[in-house]
Image (cartoon, rainbow, N blue to C red):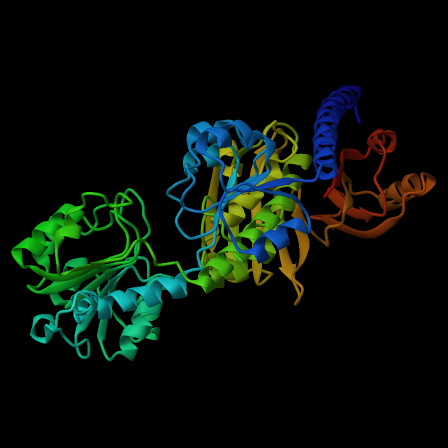
Length: 567
């Protein structure tokens, strides 16, 4: 090695050592903050009533304050003391309140809707917003069927008349459900349950949902239609089961009513505002709509709502989830979600994390820890700023929605290197703010492994890559690429990676130096492309390598890079 090459290497080594020391210092500070947080028992505010079983679950690990009478002003004053809050529909988590929530990690909504939470403000601050979407699905589906029957047979009107001392049998004739067509708008969990129950009543069921596959409709014995106008044209009864969002507000509007057959009957047990209430009132008045059953309103309570003036409209005060069983489930589910968030586990019901189906999650979940490790590994071994990251999903993974895995990569890449606490909520936003650009590529053709995740980029030295997979029934992670070489090693808590000239004695040098410092090697793997070129060595260790030992190895002329990582 010439004197010029030696000087250049020393300069590069010094630069990398300084960078690694700075990273280590940030990591140490972050670890100190996390340790302090662990010593302080997290505080949970239960702002609205949930099942006792949920509160008991939280009390096993956390300090729990139940304050059901706290108003918005008091909440704003006290929210900074809490790590988590559990609410229902009566509490509004506004941007103003969230701005004061300096310690808040999770907002738990004991129910399905989260329109009373400013999701944008929570996401920007890295606060997980979780709900309990499966807690009330049976209750909501059954209430929908109840409203379907009530309005088709005029049950509430007949009940009121008889209670008033009248006997008006001829005034309350109804219509049968058998052989009628029910149109279901939105074929999620509740829509499916409604369809199943309607088919039990011998109804013909058609459904519209552009995000549901044809095979899913067929599985449920339901005809899927591609155009909602066809559903309007053919349905005798129409029920909506859409989430509340800017796109769905007023979804069933005046134009929709014009497309429906005369005498159609409407049910809304989903969210207020999805049906344009003014347009529905006009359709009822004109006779286009024969009857309606409404459980939810755009403004609640619906004081002065014109729908309350119609005798052929059955109304209930937002009772879709109001069963003992649903309330118990909501409290228990949200307690588990809050506990997961406070324990840094993945929160499966988080609404501000890309949602995937339970079937997809079963496939993706084992790869999430691997992607975090790959993100951390890539940053640690890089020499300088990384450019133009490309994440390649190969094999069976190519058939799935991999956004969650990309977010896991961001989390591993950024954690401990930025001031903010990084989690699955804000990792992508933080990456974007720092100009980190990632392209996802998918290749379904078979690789050397059933599934393979490779991340490619460039640093000062040129092309750089890391890769991994999971193997076996326990989904054990494996690193299979590092630097620019193939390897095969299971990640451990303490790992070191060496890039060096492929000459005899290098394994012995590393082993001798580590052994002299009483550092035991648990596992090792070597990768190279050609004899006499460059090689990489990956080792897992029983304990960390002190900085002075790393410097001793770096000082050997054959070594280009030495990296120690704690996973």
